[in-house]
Image (cartoon, rainbow, N blue to C red; front, top):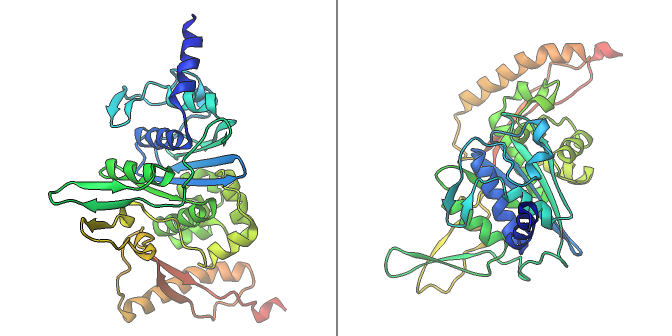
Length: 334
């Protein structure tokens, strides 16, 4: 048997479920030295969809198709062993592509991270029936913690997040929740000026691009470029702060005592502290921020016939500060 055929048959055997796919995608992002990994997962009928966005090393355009070939990798590191086996041989994405209906690099550039999208037919590649149950963490009499619950997509992501806790953070949710998380992450890491005056979001890291969206239509277009198909209505709700971002899995781990019978509350799991705590700010500093914002806004307002005689509002929510400036047409415009 030729080596290529043997590798193809082995690849088909390596991926048996959606859970196998998500672990390989997470390991791929980790090996690309990602510190932030966003996993969007959804199901429609018999189709399972994954989109994984990370802030890792990225993939050169010339490699976008080749990374799905056997023994091809864009990483320079050698293979290594983790709790799921050997990784880094250039076989993970090949194995996924051999089992998936679609496996593509949605977008990636060196240094800007990557977005990989995978679609599978659940009649060919199955998954656990119970995908809604989150794992429970039970502390025994000693120091060991047992993980309880079905070995579904969520549990696999939690286990990976715990295993890789010293190198990266993982968020898991629906495409809309992941889009909200990417927006919040971008807002937390880009200045207001960088967001407002960015002329080409494609030059920014993928994980920060949604923060530059100026309206729901723009937001939906940028999200689609990342492999996240969301409606303009959902985009509007994200921009208005009506949709909670996908939560950081490490922040959602609640360890129960062995004798406890109460399950962790959903509110405790879906922590809004994914981007750090929200400190209290002195009103003097808030007023100073407002004045600085108005100085920066003055030139912008003049070019677009907007009044600069307005007062910004400042609010702190979900680990981020939001500064809003009312847009009022200047009397000079008439």
